[in-house]
Length: 250
Image 1: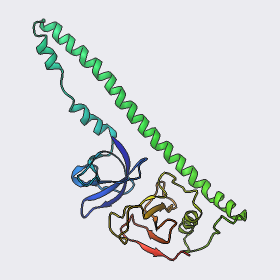
Image 2: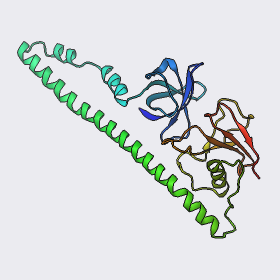
Image 3: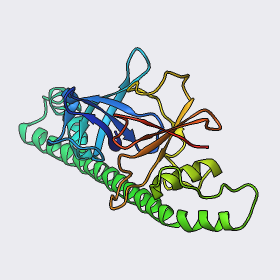
Image 4: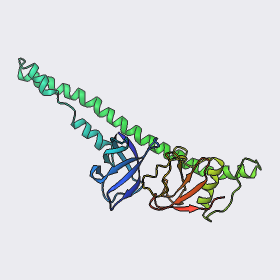
């Protein structure tokens, strides 16, 4: 079982992509595999199982809004040992057989339920810890960048206005100077251009960075995608890769 957030959703075509926690590669999912309350929205937390197809692409086999849904399905598919146990010991009395089966079921159920509860608690705790850490890092990024720029070091990139949007211009500056980024586990990872909106390049050519959206508690829909390393071209998307605008960055 894995967890993540819905990164992109196409309502008309019934498919989308999941931004997986602690994993660079996104996971494709189709509406037929989703057990989610409608409307499905970008930024929604989900839990899922996945597998690779014959082209080595990750595809979700089931997507839910709760880890317990997947756990319950797994438990319901477990083999039933009760009948086997009873048939092997049919020479025992009915009273002893029923008592043994009930005790066995209670012993199996208790550790299994405890394990599922522990997994769910760890997953929730990890998510909130990562979100708090990312938020705190984002709050500290601005004064750090300003301090480094004002120090006069020749390795720092001075602040400049490219678009007039403070968050976009700040993200461009951080890309040029190599960080620090508000989402260090996500920013700078490979952008796979699955939607085909950008010119076709070899894998690893494009990288994506988060542009924070004021008033939004999650990563939001704005990204800057760069091409080349170091970057030679910059693109801005404000709608989760549905459209791109090329930026004139010097």
